[in-house]
Length: 130
Image (cartoon, rainbow, N blue to C red; front, top):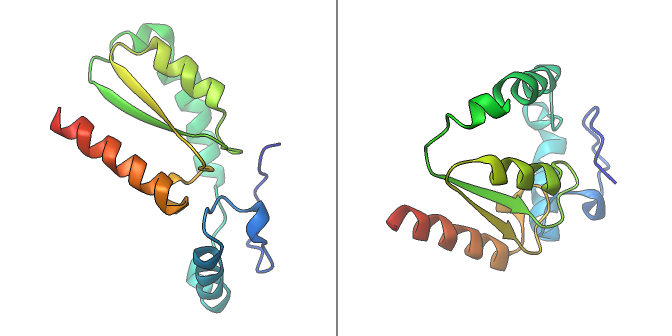
């Protein structure tokens, strides 16, 4: 089941979040409840529009073949926002793409548990050093 977006919900529950740490989730929610500047929602109409443009025009097979830059792609193992099968399909089409699935992570890998974040950062550093 994929996550739906909408208005900021001050009563959001950890079990439905993309966070891997309940204490971090609660800390962030306290900040967001008390400051209207942080009461954002996951996506905007502009984001959706640009996503459609990206998927229909930029990701054509003809254009994908022109991408020669090495790419390091991360996929969250338990992502309920971005479909892993779509990421795999793109990675398979790219000339030079290393795709890493981060275990025990949801959509936002950098809010996963400490082990997932450490694994992610080690992959980034190893990729940059290669």
